[in-house]
Length: 223
Length: 200
Image 1 (cartoon, chains in turn blue, red):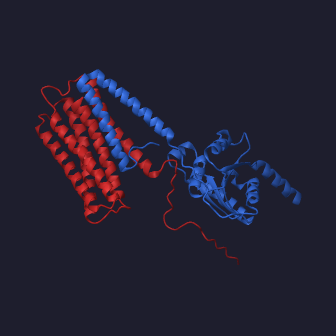
Image 2 (image 1 turned 135 degrees about the horizontal axis):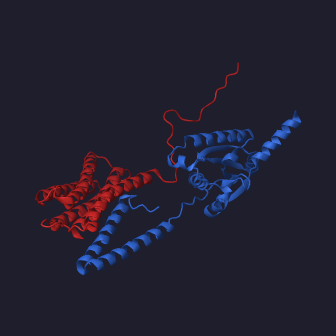
Image 3 (image 1 turned 90 degrees about the vertical axis):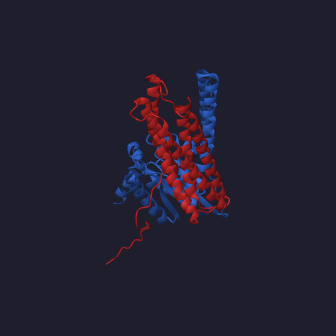
């Protein structure tokens, strides 16, 4: 966002702009009276607002290209919340890691209610996300995948952007619930991520209920 | 008996601060600061415009006069101090310590001159806070800004002492940068106050 007080140099430019703005209004009012002063005020104010909107639109989020790395090495960024413990996701990560030296970063957004988010009450959300993440990482390690993880921003797109700043991913795996049960799909997170990030994005659907039912059936048969 | 020992990856001491990058912490701090200042000055300006526009009180109320010329000279002094502040920061960025010190001393002296001139103006203006709403809001607006100049001078004083004690380098001059932002903000607010209270 455009913040005129982000640095001393910007604040100084803001001061110069303020001098020009008020000087023009005062001169117009002194020379022509109230109405010319008002006209200059309106014209300048509209110009400043138009410039601000234009400059704001021009500010693009930082896009992070993958860092150069050795042949045979692949960096995979996984974004998953409740589905982070899903077998389908783990299988896909394992498949993607086969035959290459894979570096896997699993990011679990700490989902929170809007009220709790704006009151900065996110300890419980982060703790729950950390618990799911740890369980998933343990299973990935057990499957021989070298993965590390972190809890990210509640907004999955923001979590991706944060991760890309420090982890130049070759591929992003975005895991969601099936259509109809996924808030992320409802909000168009996958589509938006494909538009926003210049990295290959793979969408994997994890049906935890189906996996649980299959696991229960398997246990019944084995008994 | 099996003993389960687990290496805990978390560090000791206080928990690591969590920062949601939706809004950068320093930007958020500055935004909150600006918001609080806008609300503070905004409440006084609301009172000012209410008195002047809605109530239609003549400004300044006869028989009083505002010292427009003296305040104009004072405005020039304060605006010039922003230039010396900017010069000071540019100097230290280029490794010119003498320039930084000179810039800070000049800025401090000009800020002090502004504040002393304002006190002098108060003593000669011929009315006080009890002489009606016009006088009250005049003192409130200029006094509120004067308080900000005082805070700015305190910051400048600390910055100047630090500069003479050998602090700040071309790589590390955050103290000068933050103080400079505050000083420019104080200048901007004075331009608004001067234009609305003295000129228009």
